[in-house]
Amino acid sequence: MQKITIVGAGLVGSLLAAYLSKKGFLVDVFERRGDMRQKEVDGGRSINLALSNRGWKALKEIGLEEEVKQITIPMYGRMIHDLEGNQTLQPYGLSGQAIYSVSRSDINRLLMDCADALPNINFHFHQRCRKIDLDTTTLTLENEQTDELHAHQSDLIFGADGAFSNVRFSLQRTYRFNYSQSFLPHGYKELTIPASAAGEFQMEPHALHIWPRKSFMLIALPNPDRSFTCTLFLAFEGAVSFEQLQTPEQVQSFFETYFRDAIPLMPQYKEEFFENPTSSLITVKCDPWVKNKVALIGDASHAIVPFYGQGMNSGFEDCSVLNAVIDQYREGQQVDWATVLEEYQTLRIPDANAISDLALHNFIEMRNSVINPNFVYRKKIEKVLNEKYADKYLPLYSMVTFSDMRYSEALRLGKLQDDFFQALYLRDNWQEQWEKGELDEEIDTWINRELNSFTTS
Image 1 (cartoon, rainbow, N blue to C red):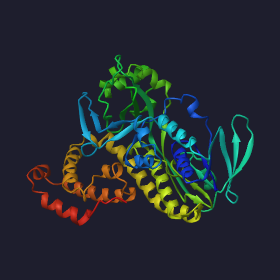
Image 2 (image 1 turned 180 degrees about the vertical axis):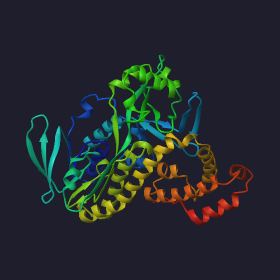
Image 3 (image 1 turned 45 degrees about the vertical axis):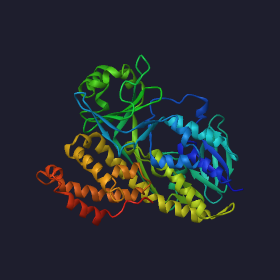
Image 4 (image 1 turned 120 degrees about the vertical axis):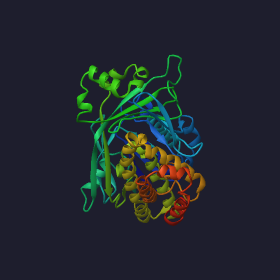
């Protein structure tokens, strides 16, 4: 039986371990941290996750779909909070379509339990990857409890150790390895809206709540315990920024100015503001993802910002695509790994780059565009087009979230849609023309000429 090593027992590493065990491989998973199932996870950095179509597909393939559903809450749209406290729901898709709020730690525990229950998997904790010998596929690991070094050899190594991957760092020192990282000027801080005194939600639970303020925003996602995990995205520096919020009085004034309706819901917001860390937002791109028999997957290969809710989903899709490619080039227990890994990265790198760009763009949409009248009206039109041309027109958000269309194709088609609507915005009375049906023929011609078909891949 072939021996496979995975560095990282996070979401993607644990899912990948389950996939590979089900195929009969011997799998060792090395994790720098302790076993998260044995202790409480430190708070303050979670950013609740949003499960959508691509993530559900992978969970279904390993048989965890129903278990995960028990710890999620469906969100059918964005609930927009304006400065006066008025709320407006913007549905995500057609009736019944939702993304699902889930705790990062809760789903990680489930994935680890699933993998641990399978044969041929061993988890090893407090193990830091120090070095990789690419010629012999050998890891040098340090036990962080004893400081002892030891070697581990296998047939294949996957680096699933996150945005600051040590496996990737080893590959970066090889010939012709391309790497880039960029940080947003914004950071984030986690806050909490607890359940009410009666143990109920204090806001609509089936929505992702957004307080968009053009250059920054506050969001809130529901939890099964009836609380909301809130995240403030704000510039590190500048006139309105974290650097300007150094005292409880400054924080109170800031919230009274921009998030007044949230204050009664957040009794500990000032204390949490200073207790919880201010974290950064990084984008990582690299190429190639494979050197010899060492491969990158998930955030180690393509860390993205969280504004499309696709970080976990794209990492899960990495695993699903890899699983399908293994089936394609497998005979019995023998796998043509050279071909598998080359095909895997050929398929995934363009899509990873595409969702990276889409996620950055969606930050602008969430904090600013959602309150733009043209954007709001466009969503109304797109819902009609989606219903009328179901096999030909899918809004960009639905392509990314409610289908398994390749991200790169969604990006291409989304640009065509943007070009068309930007041209509409320049016309006088374009909304009135739409209401009267005067644009129907033009839109029909455009859809049939430019968009052709939205069949998923």
